[in-house]
Image (cartoon, rainbow, N blue to C red; front, side):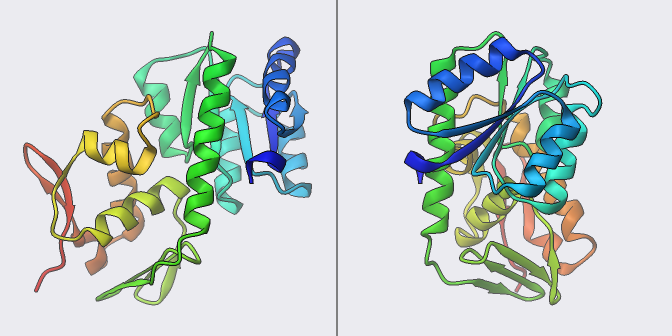
Amino acid sequence: MQGDARILVVDDEKRIVDLVRLYLEREGFIVDEAFEGQQALDMISNVSYDLIILDLMLPVIDGWTVCKKIREKYDTPVIMLTARGEEFDKVLGFELGADDYVVKPFSPRELTARVKALLRRMASKEDDEAEALNFPELLIDPAARVVKVDGKEVALTPKEFDLLYFLAKNKGRAFNREKLLKEVWGYDFYGSLRTVDTHIKQLREKLGRSRAASYINTVWGIGYKFEVEK
């Protein structure tokens, strides 16, 4: 996919857009650009993008809102780009469904490497021919990337799905946060351990009060595991 992947770069600073475009096009990517939130949303509704690089501090409609609206309809990978690096911003960004987070000022080479790594992981998931996992009141289908609770589909972000699937296919095994970051986000992910806790919280909330929510267990002093009650 990577050679012909289409990427949307959204930032109100033209010099940053031009710089990112330069590095991405060197790698053979097709690059579109937007300079404010509503423009980005209009483009996303008309073009199928393989990845979106999204600045948070946008005019008209900010990046938080754009990311939230993207996740209401699409599972396109999103890398957030911002000058703010506080942990609160990162956690909120991941709760809204971002897949990675880059703080300005950034190295365009590092951003390009993250883009390539994220696209590789998405491509490997698309090629996954693993069988669906069935548990009482819970179905996880990696081929269709669908999760159903008691027969009803539950909308998950790409990373929420990946985390749930990884835990479920390794049911009964406890994983610490470092291991989950490596296996689900990839070795080149630079986020904090809090990222895992945020996604676990979101998963539990989306699974609701069903029996499925009880499958995700906290292992005190270690991390998390997926366990089906007998």
